[in-house]
Length: 136
Image (cartoon, rainbow, N blue to C red; front, side, top):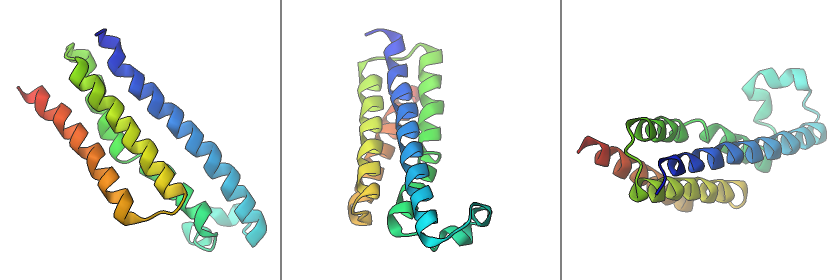
């Protein structure tokens, strides 16, 4: 397997960020218009709390994409820079990406934490598998 394959899930994550960003902006703009929240009021998070759940859920998901995935990015670039990329790392990286897509779908739609949390844990387990493999 080519070492650069480990970087493809990073590009996929960037594209996921872009899709979620577009969804967030369009949903939030529509919700702000419907609820009468002025754009200038949005500088304070408290004003955005009055938006309907779908707009808040997508914004929460957008923020979540800047949490655990930052560890993923750092780890992937470490693995790539050290020349340690192998098929197990690549499968784990794609698995992590898949977990984030599924997490986004759940959070965008019915937003059940009892389902979202196990998906979140799967992503963390995959990150830990890659990190532990780097220790040895």
